[in-house]
Each structure stands twice: as structure tokens, then as C-alpha cells.
Image (tube, rainbow, N blue to C red):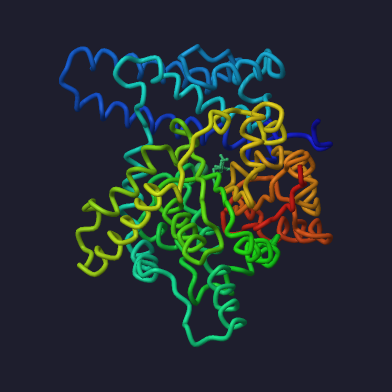
Length: 454
Ligand code: F6P
Ligand code: MG
């Protein structure tokens, strides 16, 4: 049950797979070792010090394996819920494969699983997140965009009473389109590509809609925004729908996701939102439960923005308080299925995690955020850019019970589909004119699959 196109692999020098496996991943791991060393130097108890030194030694071994292109060994049984899934996949498909000749998607995910293993077998540091400092720090340096949104959306969303029914629907449509773009471009702040961002870089990545909207929409190369609105606007008629977000990055992107989810609830388009995060640190900036809690609590109680005015801080507190209330009332639910931290693509979701597939099939619409989720949906293979999205995602569109799926993704890697019938020409032109277009994050896709009733 595979697509007819080859998956990208680390030895494909023409692809971003090569640069990632060869230099990005060792750099990320090096930074992670620096972080753990910093924590080590803050410890006082001998037991904890010895325990953390062992974690750092294991990271050193992983670095040797990665840079020496070692064969992929099974994952140690550290009691995690995903060990069996990992070792089954390794045994079935990747016996004897190494970091460079295994499919890129798998090898990259495997590296994050091995990194987790360095800590999961330890006594005191099994939950340690080597990326946590970086995630919190980048959000604290995002104040401009954070307040721009909070000042606009702290007040509950309301449509002017004096508008006709048509006028109201139009106002709601425009707000939906704007916030979908906010949610989309929130994906540009992924820390795995931008290590040590300056304030200026952060700002330029954080588009918050407004005047910029028409210009940024031009960069959405595969654009199903209108179809998405048609899907969402009818949810209310079924006394509100359930919408799921398969989350990507913590901090600013998660904040944008929450602003969007808040709008969907307030406007009555959805009545319940389910957020799916990761069980442990993943691809640098992905959301874990701790990141989720940190965001909501920091908005209410934190002191991240010493320069902000009282009105600005109040707007954040109001957002955070409302969001925490949604959680208490069960309108927002945070979940973390083990499947999300495996090396499987979503072509295997229905067979390897049937419970999760069934769960998602009960949703009215599932948003998949970001580049990695998009690679997983599309098998991370060399499909032509004209391939229709529902063909590219295979069983996630064609299996009985497949939910409606929307992928909101800024393009950061090789696989690009859903650009329409002349998509191959569009891609060729960009290849000639702007060689780095597939990894810059400047372009995006908003793609919709209608799913298949069960
Ligand atoms: O494709 C480049 C890349 O950095 C991958 O290594 C990773 O899949 C992805 O981008 C991370 O981006 P996102 O956070 O949007 O999934
Ligand atoms: Mg990510």
C-alpha cells in the first residue's frame, strides 16, 4: 500500500534530505548537548549529576552513530507506549539500513526517538526536554505579534447586530479566511530550521494577517481556502461540529492555533476542539503537554514581557483565562496518542493505529499543521506537484471513514503536491527562478481532502 513515487533518502544529494541528515541533525544534536550540559552545571545533588552525565554520554553515542552513519538499531525498551511500534517498523522494513539509506522521514524521526531514549532510561531526567529553553525563549521574543493578536482577539468575537443575515455570514467568512492564514503562517516559526533567530527574523516570520493578507495569499501555491470555508460554514447547522488539530510547533504557532480555535468556538462553527500533541520532545519545537500547559499558564500568570503595557498584559490574561476555562469545560481537549511520535507515515495510520483512525474519523474536520505532518500525509516521496492532494495522501483520503482533512503547511522540504493541473509547470518555473523555494518557508499550501464516509 505504497505510492508509486520513491521516498526521499539522506543520500539523495539533490534533496533537502541530504543537508538535513548530513549537517542539520548533528547541529541540532550538538545544541541539545549544550543545553543538557548547562543543566548539569546547575545541579547540586551527586545522584542527579551522575544520572545526567550518563544521559549526556548517551547523547555522545548518538552523535557518533549519526555522524558515522551507523546502522539503525532497535529502540531500547524504556517503557514508552511506542517501543513496540518502533521496533516492529525497524524489523519489518529497515533491517540493516543506516541513517543515510533509510527513508529520510524515518531516519529523521528515529533520531528524535533515540534522543528521547538518552533520557527516558534515566532515573531523574526521564522527562527532560533539551529544547524547552529554546521554545520558551523564542515565544518571549515574539511580543509584537503576540500582542497584535491578543489586543484584537481578547474581546469575545462578535458580529455587528445591524448586519443582514448575508452580511453577518460574509463578516464571518472574512474573519475565517484571515484567521486561517494566521494559523497557517504561524507555522513559519519552526525552530528546527532557524537556530538562534534574531528579533528581526522572528518579526519577519510572524505575519498576523491584517493589511498583509492579500499579499501573503499569493504565496499559497495550492489554495483550497474557499473549499475549507464551505466545509466549515455548514458545521454549525449540525449543532456545531468537532474540529481536531494535529499540532505542530509550540510557542507562537500554538498561540496562533489557539486564537483560531477560539474563533471557531465563539462563532459557533465548532462546539469542541481536540488538540493532538507529542508525548516527548520531537523535531525541536513540536508541542508537548508541558508546552501546552506552559503557554496557557504563562499567558495568565507569566511575566515574560516586562516591556508590555498594562492593557497588553490584560489582553493576554483574558485570552489565557478563557482558554483554560474551555479546557475545564471540555470544549478544548488535549490528547497525545503514541502514534504521533513514530516513524510511520500517515499512509499507515489506519493499519498501525486503528484506534486513532477511528477516533479521527469521528471528527468533522482534522487540521494537520506544518511541514512534518504534511510529509507524513504525503509519504514524503517525489510525487509530481500536480498530484491532487487526496491522491497524494492515499488511505487517509480513500479508506472508509477517512475524515475531512486540511493541511496548513508552509513549505520547508521537497515534497510539494496539490498545485493544480499546471502545478508541474509552476514548480519548474520556481525551480529555475528561486532555487531555494521549497525550503524557505516563504510559500505555503492549504489543501483539503473531502474524506470518505465510513
Ligand atoms: O523539512 C524540513 C524540516 O525541518 C524537517 O526536518 C521537518 O520535517 C520540518 O521541516 C519541521 O517543520 P514543521 O515544524 O513545520 O513540521
Ligand atoms: Mg515542528
